[in-house]
Amino acid sequence: MTHFDVFNGDADGLCALQQLRLAAPRTAVLVTGAKRDIALLQRVPAEPGDSVTALDISLDANRAALMALLERDVAVEYFDHHYPGDVPAHPRLDAHIDCAPDVCTGILVDRHLGGTQRAWAVVAAYGDNLIEPARRLATSLGLDEARRAELRELGENLAYNAYGDSETDLIVHPAEICRIMRGYADPFRFAGDEGILRTISDSRRADLESARSTRPSTDLPGAAMYLLPDAAWSRRVRGAFGNELAREYPDRAHALLTPDGHGGYTVSVRAPIARPIGADALCRQFTSGGGRAGAAGINHLPADGLDAFRLRFERAFP
Image (cartoon, rainbow, N blue to C red; front, side):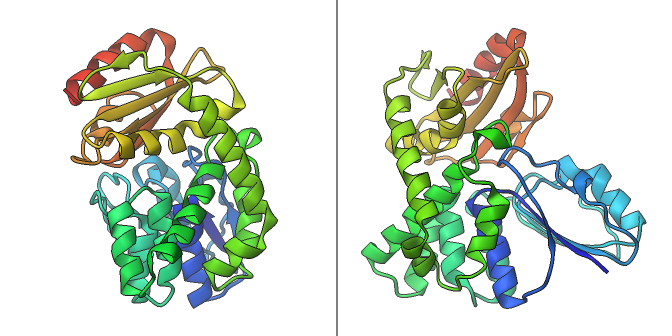
C-alpha cells in the first residue's frame, strides 16, 4: 500500500506536514507545488487500499478528486482552514477543518497532536501572517522576543518561496524543502544550518524593495489596489508585499494583481487585519477565486473583468 502526502507548498503546508511526520514518521509520495496550485488531489494516482494526507488545500477546490479517491476505497485524512463548502460524510474521510480567521492548518495539526511539535506550528502561523496566534503559541513554549523573531523570519521565508504563478517562479521546489526539513526536529537548527534559507531570504528582500517602489492604482481609506509588472519578482512578491501592507495599514484591505500570461491577472487579496473577513467572499464571486476570510485570491481574472473586480473590491472594503 502507498501513502501520499499532499500539501500546499507554503509555510503552513510544509510545517503542518512536518509536525505530523515528526510525530508519526512514514514513507510517502510527496505531491505539492506553488502556493496557488491547490488542485492537487487530482494528481494522486492512489489505488484501493492506499491512503492520503491532505494539508492546507481547499476541500471545495478538490471536491471531485476527493470523492473519486473515497469511492476507490482510499482513506483520506484532511486538515485545512480554507472555505470547504459542504464537507462530505464518508467513513474513509477524517476531516479536520476550521476556517476561523485566527486559524491555519499548522494550528489545526498542533491541536490534533496536543502541542507535541508546537514550535513548527508557530512557524506555520507566522508564515500565514497570523501574528497574534503565533505569539500566543510561542509564549506557551516560553520563547522570548528574540526567539519568536527567529521563527517569524523562518515562517515568512518559507511562505515567500511558495509564491509565483508556476513552479518556474519559485526559488526552491517545496518538495525539496520538505525533504531537507525532515532532518530537523528543531526549527531553530533548520533556520541556522541551511544555506538554502539564506538564498530565499536574500531574494525576498530584493523583491520587496522593488515592490515598495510601486504606487497603488486605487488608494482609498478602506482599500488599495496595486498593479504590479509582468516579472518573476512581482509574481513571487505578491503575498509578502500584501502581508507587509496589511501590517502597515491594519484598517485597509489590499489587492495585488500581476499579469498571468493568459490575457488576464492573478489576484491576491488581504482583508484588513483589524477586521479579517471578506476576502474569500469577494474572490469567490469570480471564476477560479477562493481562499480564506483574511486572505484569498483569484487564479485568473480576465482583463475585461478588471473594472468589475475593482468595483466589487471597493464595495467590499469601503
